[in-house]
Image (tube, rainbow, N blue to C red):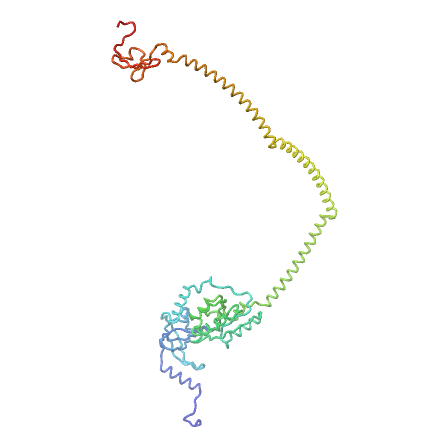
Length: 453
């Protein structure tokens, strides 16, 4: 029974002291432990708190390094995902009832598996251009509907709604999703896809509260990063606190340090805008009044310079009458000149009429024909008389007249005439041309006149 001495319960403090004594008895000195840092947190007191995780097994242990043992080099080595060797003393912390290592020395043991995988994924996505600045889309100035991907029960959605309603009352559409655990990546991707299919959603906030690197692991998942990159509307990352960096921060169109800041970034402050609008309206009224005063003064100066418009109109009408009279006189002179030119042209045209021109040419042709006939007759008579005289002279000088008087012309075989004794030799055959006949002869002897034969 509970009241018996054998089953008498012990206090929690006594149990904690017993566990602590047994643990410290099992490990009388410090031990070296190797593992990967997770959930690193530095307290305001200067103490370092983190978990040391075994990548090969599902095991982890809490670690605390007191400020007195923290060195700058130790603080630089501590980072989520870093693999370290830690010297510490196992102890049981009674206020929270948990096992922890009180570390006093650290050594680097290489990069942790999770950190290396994260760096490889980051390099791969950067090489594909998913983090490029030119892919960043501008955020809408006045979004009508803001989609939010976060936990249904967390403080994130409440902070966003509170800030949004305080600043301007924008409509918030929640797509609930798991933000931690093995099913979180698929849940976040489904929520982003659901909001993308809703018409009217202008921008999406993907967020959650702070946590360790394991808690934020879903926002380093490749599927989530690609879902954010492929979202058709701009995405604002609001994951963790200002010091928490995930791959979603790099691929999103904008990053907010907290979910509340994301709401402030997207929702315009209606009160501030109302104040600005009021000041702008006041400046506009003052400017318009000043402009009206200036225009009144300018109008007064113009009226003074113009004087009575009726006098100005009368002066212009008088000028118009004067120019009209001058124009009429000028037109009359021009018309008279044109009539004179036209009359002369008509007279010239009458004399140049084809019938008159043809008559003149016919008369000229008749005179030319008569003169040509006369000249032709006179020329023919002169040519006939000249021809007769030439025929008479030619006949008088004709060799045939000489031949008729009994002379003959002797020619050699080559047709050349024999003129002296040198042109013929004994034995040559000559042709003698008489008045009415020719004689073939042979030279027997050639003797000059005066020689004896």
